[in-house]
Image 1 (cartoon, each protein chain N blue to C red):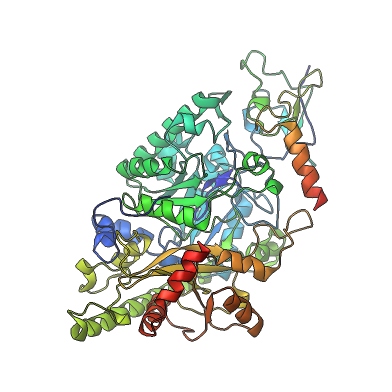
Image 2 (cartoon, each protein chain N blue to C red; image 1 turned 90 degrees about the vertical axis):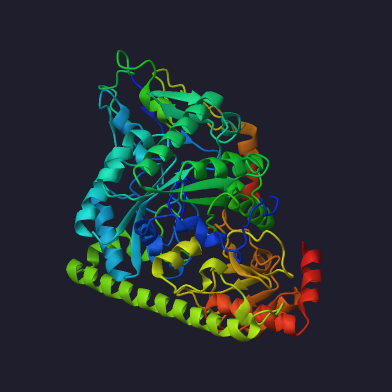
Length: 543
Length: 92
């Protein structure tokens, strides 16, 4: 099944730092440069895609339809028993849909959630191992909801044979899960594949899978299809190797690399879960993403969602759209499409205004501060590199830049990690206690960069065989490990005290402000008050 | 002589389109093989197709009632390890 996610992806359930040479800091110009060579048409393709663009994921919603149960390979992070309604991870679904039901569900969701821009098929098996069901769904949707982008996620085994069909169906975003390019390593991840009517095991199986993945990647990029590569980081198995994977897929034209942490618990019944294979720590994941970012645009906002997820990336509204409920709904599809167009136009106007405001603020700040070493908050670069910082902000340029946030090549000041509670729109607008996840930003005197998300609900919070019994707040503290400040719209007294006792400062003073402005402001406030050194000590102790 | 599907089946549909005799049908609670249709793939494939793609150990039995994919053969998870983990989970 699929470990995709954001995308979509395939594979079911489920460390050295930056500076790979060159200039990769977001303050020095490489981030937008990496995408600047792409034609405007391609940049426009990701502008409203929540999985391909980090900025877009604050504004747009997506959904997956679970029409593809069959798989043609086995991954050690996957258990093919896919029907769990309580867990949030790839390859899990509540109900399997026929293509007809999937179309009905997509139209219902797109009517109820007008921010929806993308429909993906990501399992719970491999979409391309179910070509009839997958393609029938896409065919009907491209007729009935032509404004919705179509996406597919695959393990790649059947990809070369289906590239033409993918192109015929206007699927212009494809995610391939590539965990290795070395069959010896592959044999430790994939116990078998089904190929040419036989089950094949071991290194031979991995070699065939890798060949097909690479061939499929080349064929898609030749045809101008946007390809994202997902990789599952499995400590001790493919961690160091993923740097090579990143180089190889980038050379073949992949657009974005999404390194995701292994999810492995005994309860999931997977090989890795039962054999005690651990997932990476937050620091290990970030370090590897940083190491890969010298070669490749990295995605860090993936939520590893279910194969039937619905809504904004951080949320799952699937339960509101069961087949039973959809059948009761009375929907005017034409009106819904018009409403989507209007809502998308509003979103774009708002994004443009946000960019314009940032641009003007920076312009203003440039004047008095030019030549100074440090550091008013307005002199901090966000993601726009200097080379373009004086240019008028444009839609496609900015959205493309947003997906690429390379690591700094050097630690300019004291970097802090700041966690943010946001329910969307790119602003701090969520109550601490309502957050199911936090966005984590790293900030120093040079730049603010998004580094990842921390989920605070347990992956599985269902019956007594699922949860781990730990209190929600204790879990939140663990998830916020390494963060020194939490920004939220509001927070209760009890969690405030607990956070402070753990060395994390809650801050509700930046409610409704754009996230990156607020993060930069908090850093500047701490610097001005001379508090950076104490946070650095704390971080070092907790590391 | 025919193969058979057990209640280990997870209804993933992988086998259904592969059967050269169209002997496999979706059913509740799980897929079934029509014994009058099943040819064990004789004459069509060297290996029985349903058992070659089925991801679940023990879900497909041969004509003698033996699992074609016995425990541990597909996932590599030793049966003792699985049993121990299940006991641990139940104990929580």
